[in-house]
Amino acid sequence: MAQFPAVRERDGHRLRHQRIRVGVVDALHADAPGQRIGRGVGEGRAAEELAAVESAEKNGTSDVVWKFVSYHHPSYSSDEDDYGNLWKGKSTWGDMRIRPLTKLFDRYGVDVVWNGHIHSYERTWPIREGRPVEQDGTIYMIAGGGGGGLEQAGPIRPPFQNNVRRSHHFVFAAVNGRTLELKSFDLDGRLFDTVTIRKRQASAAAPAAVPEAVGVGQ
Image (cartoon, rainbow, N blue to C red):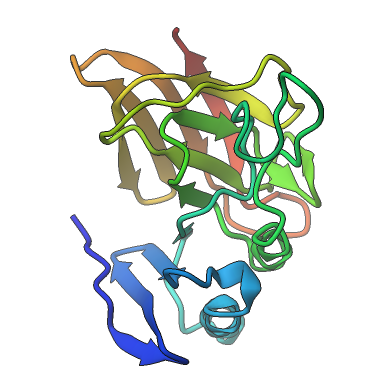
């Protein structure tokens, strides 16, 4: 279990920024209450940290296989009314202040992004350049069902959505070398979503990350 404390002050805001290395996993958390990373606070830090990982990979001094990022507001969400009321009109399908960060994740090959804010569960297909892809993309997960009142997905299903669920829940992530398993459970311990990703050795002929098996149960 990794915790991400407030580690320093910046521009009058408490900037929660922490990088955790556990084996072949590199996990980055950056956020700032009152001024989120999409508005500049923490965004540069995220780029710096991801660039450092990329530099180590190019120099052959890194054993990082998996890259995880977490922050509060979701880049992608099908919530019914947080980003435009879908019962009356259109939605931006996520926080547009944060969406520019996805370009960083594309560039540096981030595998999974975890978000909160929306009190429900949602997992996207792998996404690259703003579109669902079969491989070599980033999976975005909202795991906001730890407590509090639950929220509802809208009546229209966006192309990026793979699974959505209105329930309290938790997500278990397991890494075994170049294999990643994500399993999502409700509070009664029932498995309702799972995805397994097996990452091959990166090369021009072989994409780095390929989701091989996805199981969905409602």
